[in-house]
Length: 292
Image (cartoon, rainbow, N blue to C red; front, side, top):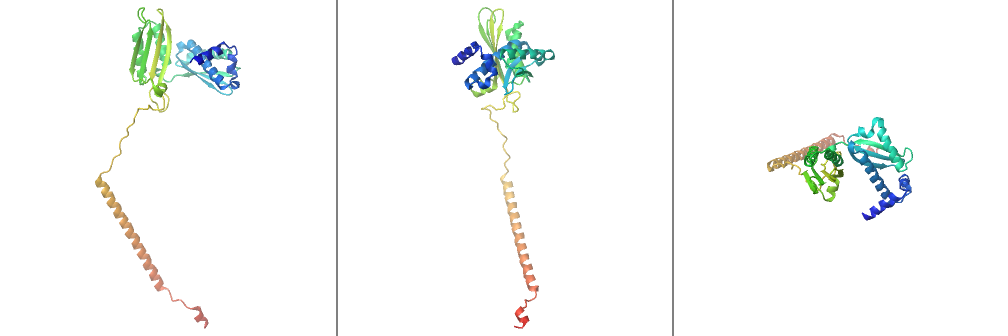
């Protein structure tokens, strides 16, 4: 973590960092990974502050040899696009000038979140604006938990910490359902988001964690099933011993009948061959016919 922090500070202080994103192909692999991480962090921070009221739910960066595609996920895509696409063009211009992209080398797209109840960032932003509006902490958090659980989530946990009531800071935890926090399943199945709310009495921290459901199609949750989920199949119906014995006897009878029919056909063929040999005329010696 310290090494990454030092690297980030070094590249932020470097005046040529903005040109590095445009010349990624000429960088070493290590510098490319660090530059991509810094680019994503700065871009995510910009979009989080700019599109907070529009249900911002994350960004995805796709790099191709010809251009860089940035997909903005939000619940209110129409607000992200703006009137006649004006706002998305403004964001594209800001990103292009900040990182020195060539004209047409970067494109921004808006994608709607399929189920905002399963998106931790959208729920964290919703809880943030509820608290800023003056809603009680307990009521706001329970509303978010109930909304998430109604969206077919396996579990939900909301943690709010800070000066909630009075001058003494404390943390409150609200949860429901099933939540895995460790192992590979905790990384794949858990969606987490953190937000900071600048209240009048001080800064309040929010963390929303959602346990996603298993989805074979990969739309609402991960495709891979959990390791401890065991599917018990229905056992096959085993035939009774009486039916097995009857089937065996029937098979033996069929085999004996087939063998008798084959033997009968063989005897009939032999009889026909013997009858044909008896009816044929005797063979005449050609030497006797010639007089020798």
